[in-house]
Image (cartoon, rainbow, N blue to C red; front, side):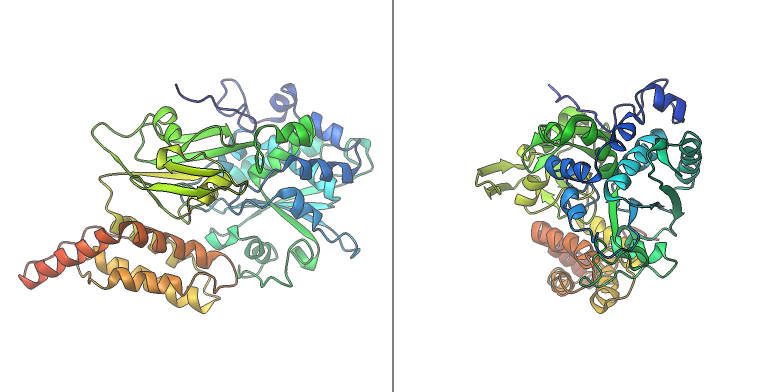
Length: 454
C-alpha cells in the first residue's frame, strides 16, 4: 500500500477549482495567520519557529529558528528578509509550483516572518527564467497590498513592510545566499567570505538579513497556526514538518509529493508512490537531493548510527526520506530533487552531463572552481567522445578532492560531490569504458561519440 501524503504546503496545489487569486485564497482561510501574527509579540513568533525545529528546505537543512536567532538586532540598522526563489538545483521543481498555484501562501508566510524579525522591507529573488512566476507574484503582491496585507500600517497594527520581486539573470550561484545578496545589490554574484559576511549580521546593503527558501517561509504560517510544538509533532525529532520531494528520471509517475519527514522510504517513494520503473528495468542508482547530492548505488547496504545513536542496516529502498537518514548514508536531502536511474543509464554520460552544468555555472571567483570544474568537464567530455584513458577515473577523483573544501562557498562541494561519488560507486564502468575505447582505437576503429553536450 502506498503511504499517504501529508499535504500541508501543497494542500491546494492541483486542487480542482482552486485559483491563485486573493479571493480564492482568503475564502480558504488565507491571511488568517497574518492577522494572528500581528497581534503577537515578534519574539514569541521567533520562539515558536525555534520550537518547531523546522529546517531550511533549500539545501543545507539549517534550522530556520536558529538562523533567526543569530540576527543582529543591536546594530540599529534596517533588517531585511529575502526569499530565495531561485530554485536552480537540477532535479528540483517544487517552489515554482507554489509560486504558480498558491502565491499568496508564500506572501503570507513572508509577512509573518518579516513581522517576527521586524523587517521593514522584504525581497523575493526569483530565477530570471521564471517569467510567468514573476508576473504571478507581481499581481499577487498588488492584490495583497490593496487589502492591506502588506504595505503601510498592515491590518492597523502599526507595522509596515513591503515586498519587492527581483529577477535574477539565471545563475546557479545565486542560489547561494551571499551570491544572491550580491546580485540583489546589482553586482556580479560572487559569494562573500564568511566570516565576516554572515547575512544575519552583514547581509543586504551591509545590514542584518535573513535569507530563507520558498518552502521554508511557507512553513512559517503553518507554525503560527498550529504552534511550534504542534508542528514539531509532524515527522520525527530533528526532522519535523513535511517535505516536498520532486521525483524525476526513470519512474512511471514523476512529479512532486509532500510527506511528513520520515513517513516515506526511498523504496516506497519510487515504487508505491511513483509507480516504479518501466517494465523490465531494474533500479541502478538514485541521487536523492538534487544533482549536487552524492549518488546512492541500488545494490549496496548502508550501516551505521544515526545522530540519536540508533543503529541501522538498510538497503537503498529502506532509507527514510529525511535530513538525518540521508546524511547518515553518505548523501543529503538537499533541495528535495530525487533523480532515479535505471539499468539503462550510462554513468559516464550522466556524470559528463552534470559536469557540463557545473562548469557552465561556476562564478570563477575561486581558483579551484575556476580551473578544476572545467577540467573535470573536459575529462568526462573526452570520455564520451571516445578518447577515454584508463587513468581518467583516478584523475577525476584527484581533481574533485582538490576542489572540495577549498572554496569560498559550497559550490566547490556541489561540483565535486557528484564526481567523488560516481567514481566511488561506479569506477568499474569508467575503467571498462576506457579499456573498450582504447582497444577500438588500437584496432583502428572509429569510436562513435555517445552524446553531444551543448
